[in-house]
Image (cartoon, rainbow, N blue to C red; front, top):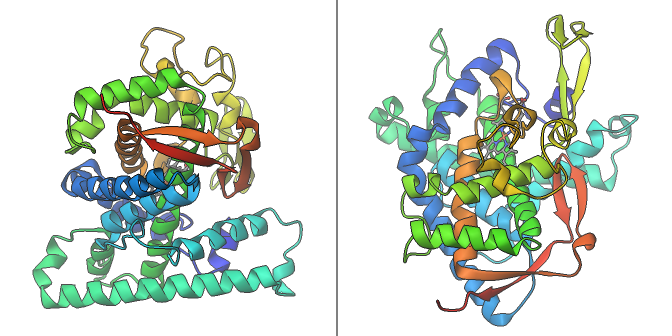
Amino acid sequence: MDRIISEIGIKGVFNAEGDAWRPQRKLSVAALAQRHLRQLYPCIGTVAARLKRRWERSAEAGEPLDFVEELKRFTVDVTMLIAFGYDVNTVEQADDVIQRELEIIFPAVNRRLFALFPIWRIVRSPSDRRLERALRNVRAWLSGLVDNARAGLQADPDRAHRPSNFLEAMLAAVDEEGKPFADDVIMSNLMTMLLAGEDTTANTLAWAVHHLCDSPEWVAEIRREADEMVGPVDVAENIDVANGLARAGAVANETMRLRPVAPVGLFDANVDAALGDLRIPAGTTVVILPRVPALDQKNFVQPLAFRPQRWMEHHPGAHEVSANAPFGSGPRMCPGRSLALLEMKTFLSMLYKSFDVDRVGRPEDVTELFGFTMSPVGLKVRLRPRPAR
Ligand code: HEM
């Protein structure tokens, strides 16, 4: 994984190791911590409200929506605001958006990860050239943000002591010898955040909507909760309301159990280790498939059924938390998990509070495509304004 990702010029928190990884990890965790999310929650609310307005127009026109595409607008806008303090507002734009470039990168990296032979090192195909172009464009776009943030810190040096987002924190940080992060490390981490925050949450939400299309009783549960807790407004007004949306959270957890968007974990053992009765010598590559324990009836009753209620029940056998690890585990566990859950709860309550959602086509026409993250291909939905109550 590291070889392939480094080769395209990304050496950030996701693939750095040891002493290089530790300070980058610290900044990522701080930028995505609950305390920080509390201050920045209004950004999530703003993006969700914009999405609602966008969808009111398409509901009026009755046009089917490519839902994963739509959701990526939501997650890119949120990630940009939270991590870089920049309002890119792709929700209110037409088609010429940064996502067009990002969507080239993940599948291309995935193809290389699983290639039998590194053919791109010998001949460059049109898809390799597309990848290079996409990387160049994303980098050029991000370097504009870095220049602006640097200028902001120079104009107001006090900000370096209280950075307001991940980008400022990276620019202001120095190591024990007083050296700042190198420019390529900063750029790598911006790309990492953008890529890690976009596909994962958007695909999970799309899978949730896919399952909810066949689960009217859970649509009713989310609505009841939203009507009671969010009240007369469209979007949860503050982080406490959003965090408290337990039913929307149960839907998110159940979706991640059935459809983990990171279904393959590739790791190298840095030291000799043991997993149960399996000895793993240092240097061994370990492939972790989180869906195997998550669909095992030893851990979950009716493991193949979409049953969000299992996450609301607290009796023995209701659910086995440790058998479901969609965010990974251990010191490298996803630092974006609180943000992802917050986005998902805010989004699901907004969607079902305001709209009826119909899938266009048959459920079996929606298929899984593994392109680094696992997305629902062919998911189109039509929205209708929810009838007045
Ligand atoms: C449903 C949404 C998400 C899922 C399922 C998910 C899943 C994961 C997984 C499985 C890992 C690897 C963990 C390991 O190695 O043990 C990971 C790492 C990471 N995730 Fe997420 N993620 C999600 C959302 C996000 C968001 C919203 C962000 C930030 C904006 C983010 C940032 C990261 C970063 C920076 C890492 C690398 C951490 C490290 O290596 O120290 N993720 N994520």
